Length: 470
Image (cartoon, rainbow, N blue to C red; front, top):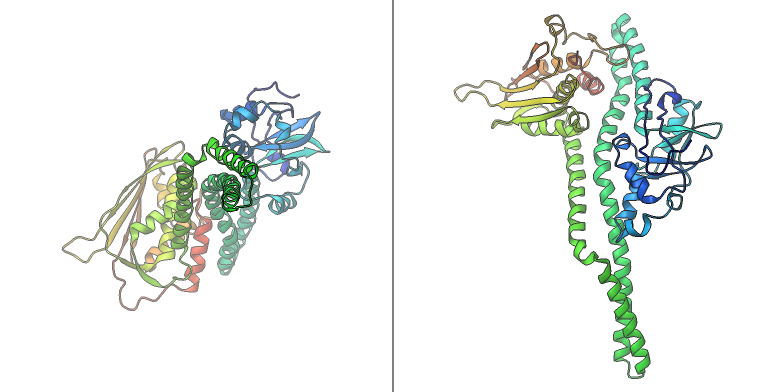
């Protein structure tokens, strides 16, 4: 039964397991006759804050969807809410939504959504049963479900690894694509927000250019007639009236006053996307696997940017950076250590807390190591767990959620760099990692090997590290 107009949609999210039916979100559909303004108000409700779109259903049959993005585009127009707010939503809906059968195979449904969704992602998909509306499904939930399947396959490889130690390299490599998908999903989420309003602003600017072009054409025709000795007063008057009308139409839109802020917002959005891409490039440094001299403060900032999608929902980050000298290291591996520990700290916080990052240079009177401290106020861990967190395959997470390789690989990376990594923790109070790295690598140190690169690939997958024990 459809809710009355203006009623807040109520969403019940089922636990994500291994079937499309587990992705069903109980979203009350809206009738096609509901007014645009009322639908816009629904999106402001807390229950709808995670929804990209709402389903439009008549007699149990889905007719289409209406997205936040579509409403935003309409209401950003001059007098958009006043003009279109009282019109039925059916006139503005997407009449070809993504439809997934509740009994569909998860992989087939994922392939269908990937092939048919439009970027930037502005809509989720409708779940149907025998053509009738069943509920909504989130694209991100479908991705998470696929990641869970990959993680389950990874666990099977871990069991084989425990029996045959020689299969460790194969295990890490099989997890590489899953970790890449997880990281790309977080980066895509961070890019999607500024990309949305950049696109909206460009579309508004395009409309303004069209109106301005019409005014310029009318003005050009007027000038041509004024310079033409054969033009009559009536012709000149007609061109004058057309030019005046076109010019007045442009002025009435008010876009002349808004165009500068519009472009400022667009440039700001592009700068945000550029910053994320640059940090992603600096973070990966796929073309710089060799030992190089890097600024560890900048490496920490890059790791924070890449992990922002997870960290921002769990903690405030407080940075206290010292003046560090350039440090010789394999940048991609050290970046991975930082990302692993930072996301690990975020996952150890149950509600919302703090992550404190402190860096200190070597003592002025010695050639000692630089020091990096990463402290959280999460759940902490007992001594029995703390003593084993660097052991390969040790994990307290449920089956399928952790392979126990992340911190072990971090330890190997720091050890290979002739540094040290220590951890202290108090249950209920938090955990602190202390990393010490020499400024200069000792003579005879070889560059990271292919075996080490394989280990780092495993660390990417193990971003959900083992200290998140609550």
